[in-house]
Image 1 (cartoon, rainbow, N blue to C red):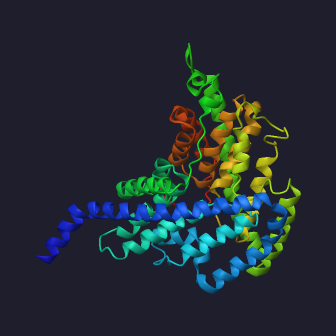
Image 2: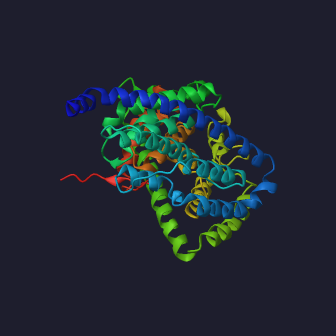
Image 3: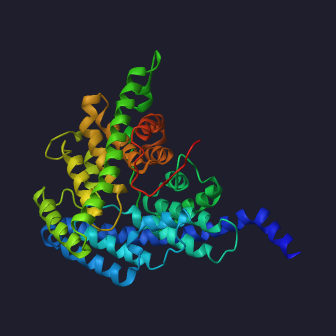
Length: 426
């Protein structure tokens, strides 16, 4: 009788139970990511107001981060690699101490000018909570499903792009495979986290391209009186190839940089201290913090209304994406915390702006496409960048994102900033 009851619960009640738990998980993660995001914005604003005071302290902040992880972390410094290890069944535990460590470490990185992201914190918060809650629920696959739901909630709570968060979480574990068993719990967790963080005052970044540039629209560029504009589609394909190369190149360079720094400077304290000093010097030298932090300042410049241009004093420089590319790789490779996604958005947007005239695509559209497609190329994902583009820049742009992100996905060389597992097709 007991076995029959267990089988009944597993077959008919497992998904409803996990979905209900995902609502609670999403609410908690939404609140935590809203708090984390607002503190991060305050730290970034303080640094931007006084860059000469804060950026020189990056090396000391790095040493403090390493010391905290060594004393309290017990393996937590591996961050997303640990999350993927649990998801792939190679490890059993994601400790709760990861949450405060990665949050404080990321605040310190940004306060002192490190060129890093923030998604690593959000996804680790969600994955950690989902994993630990699942240990109290004795249902088959509860651990994997709630881990995926937690990752979706974290991304949605911080970036407020729930559709992108859902597909990112379910496609990120296996290359070429969707974790569809977690689809419903991930969906409710993502939308709950998104709504909670919105209610708590965390603002979403979005751009209405049509309002900024009323003289053109994506539909008008894609279709004309003769039907589909093949010439423009080919231009989008070229952009997609370029974005895929840049995104894949970022992921590969990051992997090589991590190995190189670990080999040349095996002592983590010396590694982060010496490199932190060099980073502080470079970040201050290059326009006093232009490339510090998330890179949202560069993104804003790409969509500065009709004034958006290349190499003007108030707008984007053709070299912006290169400096952000290199400084982010070094910052993350030596052990500073935060992640890579928002800098990838900045790299993609500025690279798109720099190549727009060459390819023959309007600058703001090229920047928007690069914003999403370089991220897709670096994460080896297809659907997530398409939805990120649509949720940030409007769903009328979706056909353009679809074309560009397909080519970026195909041309990224199979690289990823995450420890994905490859699905072998026989």
